[in-house]
Length: 322
Image 1 (spheres, rainbow, N blue to C red):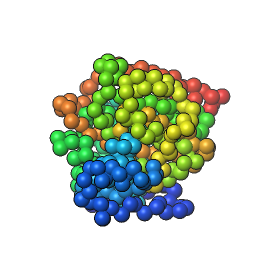
Image 2 (cartoon, rainbow, N blue to C red; image 1 turned 90 degrees about the vertical axis):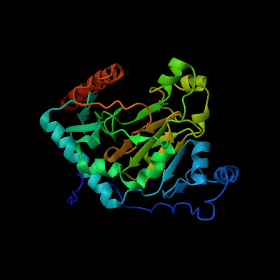
Image 3 (cartoon, rainbow, N blue to C red; image 1 turned 120 degrees about the vertical axis):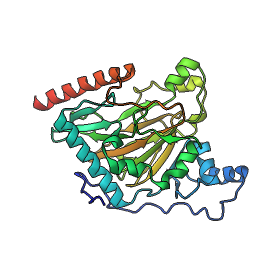
């Protein structure tokens, strides 16, 4: 049995506890129309409990708004161990001077103390048996079936299990991520909207609306191709939108959001380590198996992003030494 480790930066568990998730015990057998009516009357910040099945109201809420939040899917001890595992893997990668995993670049930059820090890592579960076992736990089976009966966890496909860190500090590589949709490439090439693109994320920090974090535009997952391309400038527009909703999380929460909707990560008004926000996204794949290994080439679009990221990191290091 693995001995639990302490994360370098434990999550903030002070303050108010989360609201209790919705009690759906009387609604489990609603038909789609009844469930849609119930979902329409719920607040946009509604929290749900993940059980053995996705309930009719949970389905309806996701269909209507494009996202859903599940309360405390990971226990506090699991959150701590997962964060400590990421710290351990980061130290291994830094010691080895490794810049890529399975062809996907690792994004290193200075942290608030001026030390090298891993802001984004793909294929994180490949280097952690604990993390690999965790994402395959039976509690996530309803999420897999929500994606599709034929869905699988692509630990060695796409970018694998992706771990993200955001910090607002001088020289930070990732203080935010501007408005975007994940359907841009499909719409640009085919001029039509793809089917549902569900992103499954585990959250490790207490993020209040005032703390920045994930913002979504509810309902935009059903928009047309023109709005997907031109409602905002992808990865450039950062300005608030009057319709945006802050997705509030506590450590261990799980979110599902449709990648066709407009979403962003807002900058925290806090500075340094208090602004830290961490999340992990698990890929559920339905298309043909295409696993990657250490000999896999880096896709062209990732080479471009990597060049930009390394340029930003070099500038940040120069300013800090400056």
